[in-house]
Figure 1: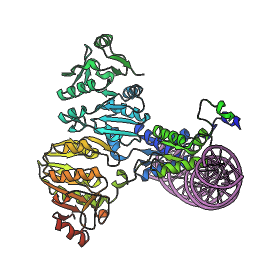
Figure 2: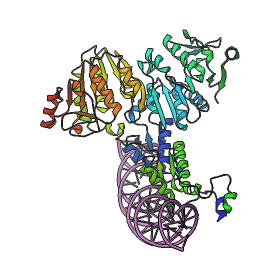
Figure 3: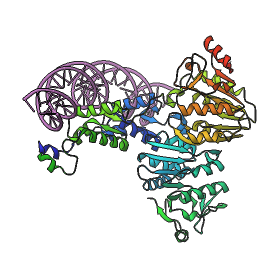
Figure 4: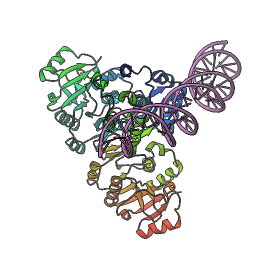
Length: 266
Length: 266
DNA sequence: AAAAAATAATTACATAATGCAACATTAAAG
DNA sequence: CTTTAATGTTGCATTATGTAATTATTTTTT
């Protein structure tokens, strides 16, 4: 009887239906679509089983069935597909690198912007997160993930950002103890400073950089050397800057002289 | 017990029930699901024993049983998306009627819910509105409209409603001077009261009914006579109730005796 | 634009896994 | 010892999944 102990489970680990459902929804949030065949392969079950899963989830309104798979439920999709075109690969890479800095159970702040949206998507693998954001799209995406708590910082909505700005958001930031913050930016100036478009945006990011235990700016390479009007006060409080390729040497040096490290996503 | 010595790494061969329970709950918190077979293997007990454990924990409300295992407990109420399709025509009619009460330039509060979403859609003809809402979908929808300012009330997001709830939202309500509020509700009780699903929801709606110059509950006919657990305190502060067809006479009378008028959308 | 080919959905049924209940066995307690 | 609580076993009901034939749908080809 003692010998039994050494026996490890060989193939018995057939996935529980709710696990499949969670993973399907996670993939949907990350990719926007799922295919029946790819899911059947992944879970090592028949396509029929996946079809039954998808049908069930569709009846719950958690996705839309399409030929060969499923897509995000319509209202979310709008928020999702939009603006995803430019530099999508770079942003996805940055998202993955950012997600690598996050552990299960952390409190994460996500700024508005398409790059931070990519971070949100990459975070779908983490469990038990608390997400805190000013972005409507991010809040909507993340609140549909299982095991994620979402706090929306309120305030006036900037139609361009589709995110809360202004005094209310600024105040709301105070209430949170944030483990790690991912912030967007308008540009990365030649002398190694992250800059912004608006005064209130700059102030908001500055505060978050100061409040979070660790703050990172996420910037794709199109922002290198770009000049936007506002400096982000005390931006050097940030722990680092995450980019998709190494910025010009001059910028790197200037940046690291101020403090933040440069993290290049691959 | 020879086995005790042999297995120093994992639990002892026959873990006590409370240990199993603790471990089961720990795994649930970590993964969201547990499987009966994997637990039986891990503890080296029979499936039946695990089943009895899970049944006990389920009775205590600490998890939900599913085929083959258990998942995190989630109080069940029809998910937001599930309800979106139902009664679409009725909701559109209510939306038009509600929009008829709004003038250009007003400050409008929109509660979460599918019926209020219909109101939001109907409001697209009005100009220069200020919209104030707890609903992510409504905020996203309205901020894309020209000539509309949107204020999102922040707070923790309820995944079912996809809207902010809790203390932050409650506090944020104070800051606004609202001309007209459109509020949802869980049901319209036989004695002419609007009722709600949750305590915090009821409180939030009550406050808004008190704060707005005029407040209307929007209720489609599926809510007539439905009993949900929470009364909305001082709901008779509301100016009226907008419905898609006339409720039973008894309800109408009870309602109007309390104050609010009944508006039937066509 | 129509026909043909390929892919996917549906249906119906077979098989395997799980749930349940009754009873048997073991381990601890008095 | 006996008693009691917990766990294991067995047989059968139920549920989930797999398989295969059929029907739709999409895509490709002409």
